[in-house]
Image (tube, rainbow, N blue to C red; front, side):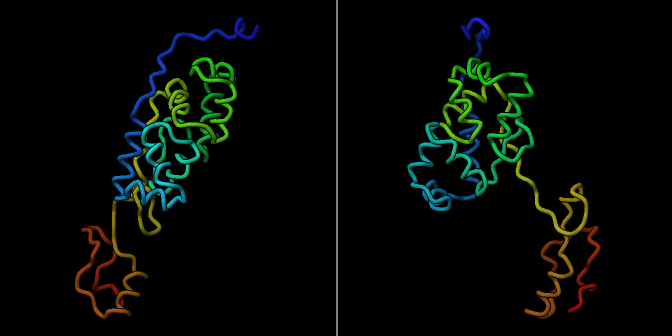
Length: 191
């Protein structure tokens, strides 16, 4: 009866490797082995190996996102992956049944994914139809000082930091983070 109300269009649910590839590259970029990452998040190294083969759990994926500074673009700004999935589905105007039908998953599986549970393979199938252009977001660049985020690429050594260095080591004759437009020079530091 429900199938007469919701028709499932033919869709390409090819689960792209891009998310898993980006995850593996993010792990390597921070210099962690599968074992080291597993130890950091408190799981067996097999959990990371399974994740990188697309058969791991969403819970493991969520756990590795923080130490890898791994975030997805194309889903929304919500805090949790589940919230991002739910809000993206609702933004498209899809019910759970419609999302399940389009991704060739069960309604329960889609609901579980929206609660942060399930398998990475199922997540990839859902993402293929819900947010096909989702990809890793570039990590935020750190910046010092009270400047605007637009100024995040301008670096200078903060005065408080230089004072502590001078007290501990004496006079410093080289600013480790100089820029031509830095407002603080070593002559201004109170060493």
